[in-house]
Length: 306
Ligand code: PSU
Ligand code: MN
Image 1: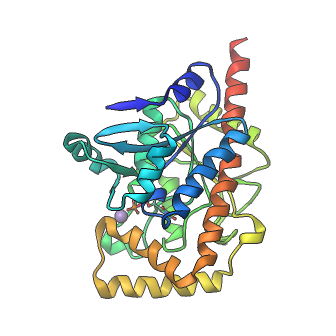
Image 2: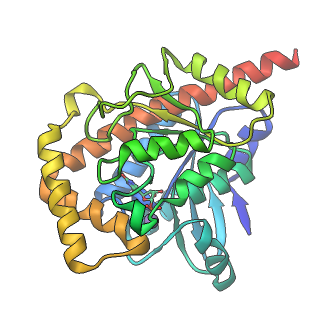
């Protein structure tokens, strides 16, 4: 059910850094052909920073860990690929279908392959109004349970960010700011909410990840890496777009796993090309940090064996 690319397998066997990447961002997160171009560029950034990139998705019911450029192109151009979170996996496997992996599913598959670091744009979280809708992304439970370090630019303000942090606290997920005191809000560097700790570099992050593991505390670590300053967007513009998107969602009765893709697409439509450009910039920025964390983990693990 799993196919690991030979170069990923070899790197893992030799304690070399590997960074996982998700495929929902390709098939649902960006338009074609920017999605494919970005996915390839993010892989290149990871490789320029000394790690092996492993883009993950499901093809004909096989979990592919480390897609080829042709497979990435297919994910980006095919359209109508199912968005697959933890609960969807069994059906996709059994029916031998294609599936785009969310943060939750990419974590599951990365962990199965032995990959410790995963780079994405934004994670899912507690939705606004979750008090009555119960809409909480499976990404958060996966962070609670699965041993993967996830590098993101925080979460989009389509979510209830204070409740998202409360949930992560309850489930014991450390939220670390990369050179920042605040949780990043995807398009904006700051959310007004404090992270658990400010990390000055990737070595410090690796120390925290290893301390967690060595003490036997299961589950992931979340790294919030603010968008580069030159792409930081005005929160007023973003919040206006989010308010409009939420109102349209209610009007149209959008529910369930359609909520996140609907809101993301609307916000993108309402903020035009700026948000796409920012989105691409922040993922590449996360790729640098992810590759450095993966590298640092390998160095520290290697030292323990000599
Ligand atoms: N947030 C973003 N961009 C994304 C997603 C979330 O800013 O592309 C995607 C990720 O794949 C994430 C998923 O894991 O949406 C969460 O969906 P849900 O809320 O239905 O769990
Ligand atoms: Mn949901």
